[in-house]
Length: 113
Length: 116
Image (tube, rainbow over all chains, first blue to last red):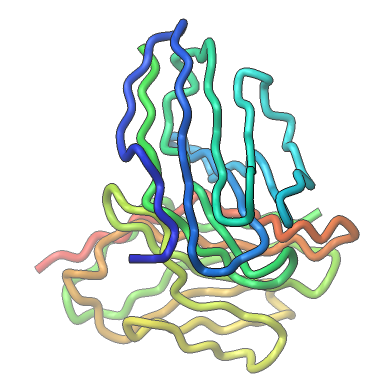
């Protein structure tokens, strides 16, 4: 148990569906992150939130839409995805931005059909 | 800009043998460096981190890493491999540039296989 919980663990969706990934942390951290992990590629940072404000959008297509309603929750809203978006999506949190280590959730395995 | 290179996408060792996973980094500022481990169907777990204190860093599960500025390396070692060490290992450098977003830049990962 890392203190960062992601739901669902697995998700299969069609290209016309709309779904959301949820991340929750009760570590009292101020920063939260979405990463994408694809086969044979390094982890890619997608979004960074600090104190509920987005501080980085790493050139992510608009079909991915993050939401951070409070410091404990982070969502990733998905719509009209492509098969190449199939990947493991990892949420992480850290005490603050900068040099503190990130704590990762177990990820959501997304398959787009 | 920072970058990380992990030499060898797959490393295979026998149980009880030395584990050496290689990581080289590139950074324009003094780096913060991390090693993470990922077991199948799990998220990433921090093994150890270097944040400009002692150059030899000890982590969990008997792993350690040494920061060598002259070689821009941060190799991960363990004297004696256990079967339970089989996993994927990621080296990462933290973005400490002007943006300072806490962005972790990861290497491509090294899969460690431990043979009985």
